[in-house]
Length: 272
Image (cartoon, rainbow, N blue to C red):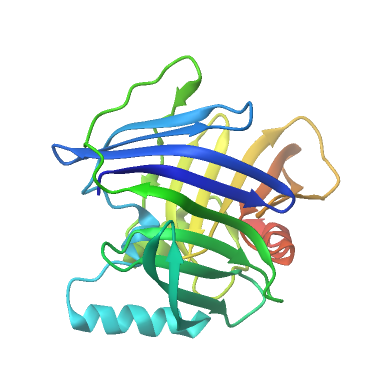
């Protein structure tokens, strides 16, 4: 879709508003997000192919009813999905959808999807007690916007290209087994979706169950550090040190998942 609009974003006690412009031209997406009430930079995403498939998206795609049934069966092993009636967001009728986790290792979602286009008009991340952690919502939306390209300016920085290797879900276990290290514990349903290996700096592995995402980073360090847990809004991070042949490596797990999840994944990382 090509559209423009205003978005409100709330994370715990912080509130922000943004202007978003999104266009499609010659099969490529262009997107610009500008912060309206804070000093942080916006971002520009230029020339992203519409046909590009990310690792996590592969778990959520289907081409026929058989694949659709298999996908929903997989998701419903870990989440309860339910329609919650109608909603009205940015003056548009929408369908409310609630996604509730079946365990304590991931968060749930409350979504509102535009009836006409399926565009997600609002998304709220919720914890195990149903409390909102993070929320974004359109407050104004124009679907008649021209599909124009966007260029960076002095206040908006372009997004850097990623260098990771996307993993076919069918090869997830084989690729993980080939690494020099592994996480011995992951929440059920999480699969390796992307790797990024730098022999000098370290390695990163990204896992997803199709909705929730967490990344594990292994980086060289000068010394050992005490285990440390940090949280910024919906994102939790846990760091500890792993030792090998007298060298120190920092293991850091980052994701929009509960604190116990990043801690347990980080604590389980071992050399193969």
